Amino acid sequence: MIIKKLIEKIEGEAELDFSFENGRIDDVKINFGFYRGIEDILVGKAPRDALVITSRVCGICNHAHLITAVRAIEDGYRSAGVEVNVTKKANDIREFTLACELIQNHVKWFYLNILPTLEKLVDAPSEENYALKASYLSNTITKALAIFAGQWPHSSYAVPGGVTCDPTYVDVLQAQTLVDENILFFEKIMTGLKLEEYFTLESCSSLRKVKGDFGKALQLMGKNGMAEQGQSHDRFIVFGESLFWKTGKALPTQISTVNPKFVTETSQVGTKVKAVAYKKRLYEVGSLSRGMVNREPIVKNLHKRYKDSLLTRVFARVHEIALLLEHSKKLLQNLDLNEASCTLDASLLLDEFEGIGVVEAARGSLIHKVKVKKGVIEKYEIIVPTQWNLSHGDEKEKGIAIKAMVGSKSIEEASFIFRTFDVCSVCTTK
Image (cartoon, rainbow, N blue to C red; front, side, top):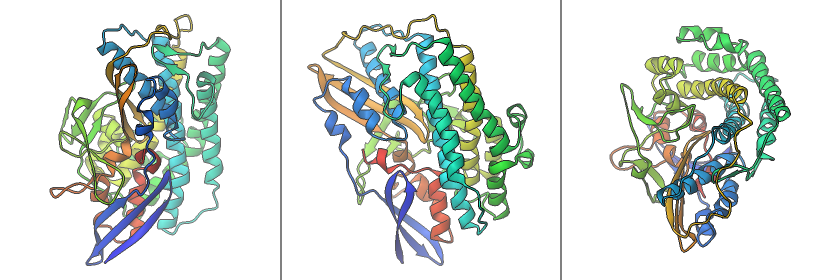
């Protein structure tokens, strides 16, 4: 028996075809029926047009696309022999704004998607206004982002060689105040723990100390036998290097290096979305992958007990909010306003180059590849996180999210597992 279900409350639309055998899901087909053609639109355009066009691939991760496009052009310039030295100031501002975007992504995913869907699934409704909480926290951190980026969404302040903003001490103080507001919310509303106390959590048993909305979600999953559900292939990969994350691929007991040049796309039957693999193997991307590759102690401890389950996946992403808030505060404290914002002459244009840009977006590794000839883009390739997690797989093994859903007792249970990957069909149907 096959049952079709349109998944709502995600970015864009996705249709899932569930196959059942002996009362459990034994296969899933993930269908994205639209094609937007952003990559085709970029062909024939000037390279820097990508800074404006790619940031409009998505209204949620637009900043990640902007930074990735900038890095692709900078990489291309370097490969063509141009010296591109981005100052620490410019790098720190880029990292700060990107961290802000990830925080607001994580918060909206948790409050608008995970928590209300979980309560409905386990029949534990509440009168909480989760939309108001999501709006407050995401709006507050986005204001901090906009101090440097000028606006959000669809900012274009990052350019090859640096950034266009030149913040003052007053700007930094305003941003610090907004970050502190977010930290206070995380402490009082989300966890019931001071940030310093939260970071002392090291074992699964210590998670009982977590209160607030995050504690509620952990308890609901634990009490309803969901801690080990949603396990997949237990393989993780991270391509976007920064001051905060390392790159690499992780198996349960081994971490090794990666190179985005070995990332390949393949067409899939029944969907407009291409699958992505690294050296012909499927890997999960996202917060759990970053936690595993970077050996985050509490994530590793949780994974040791529950593997790559939906509980571990949800925990890793909310945990990353705390990590990013602390990282953001340090970036502002150490920001050197005396350095140059941009070191590359805007009039410097190259007729021919190829480059790769990579950033860790909220849902995982985002890759842009650009090839320029005769001063215009000949080919532009965008590989987004959802492509990694929602591959159909092949005759040897099922895709990451599909593997996680197989064995579920109901469509509702499988759909919740699907949401833990935070699907974005808008980016995926690029």
